[in-house]
Length: 64
Figure 1 (cartoon, helix red, strand yellow):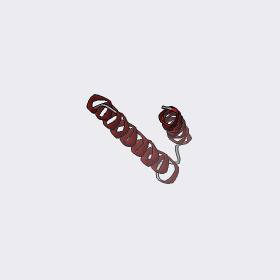
Figure 2: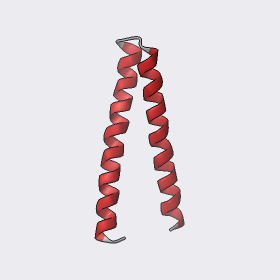
Figure 3: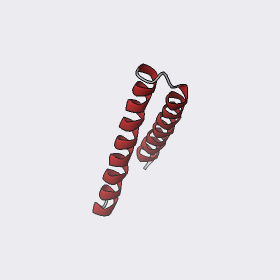
Figure 4: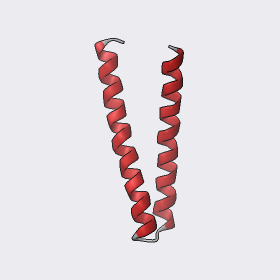
């Protein structure tokens, strides 16, 4: 992997980590403190999208 590719990978997964962590915290906050099903549902959708992104990238990385 080139240095540029490694930097792109690092930035991408730092963003994924921040988005995933924020969605998980929003899910917990929405369920425990606010009892907000809208916040919880949106958080689950974001977590599912992050999971799909990571699984797709791992498959691509494995075949490369």
